[in-house]
Image (cartoon, rainbow, N blue to C red; front, side, top):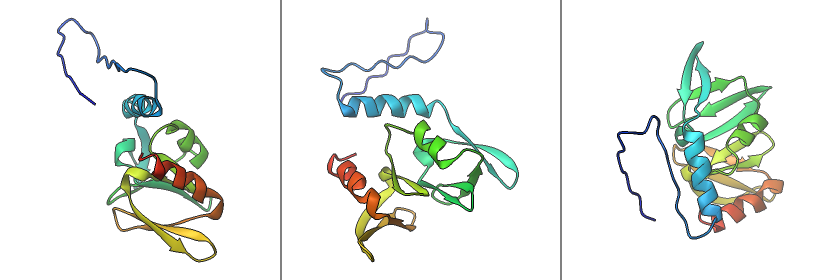
Length: 147
């Protein structure tokens, strides 16, 4: 992949153009990544609203009806449901690993067997998350693709 930046004085706004031989899954992933980067998630911490970009999001989970978003060192809350967040991040590096958890595979370090035919996902920030049996195959497929 080559990346070229060409400043254009006449442009009114940022323009990103993807030139490719064919539309592959990698191209679509890049498109969604760029498109979503411009649209941050609005989250709360201690009653203050913050802007959170998907590239900083390690994982999201729902506990007792509340959705929390985790970065390397911070925990935020959102009014959006986990399903809404999943739909907004569709086509990117996010995958559901259980009924109440969605992870960013860019921050996945390793996966190991766990009890009851489940897996244990180790994240770069030290968190360990359980991958439910019904979500293992999807995670394996994404890891095999090298995403």
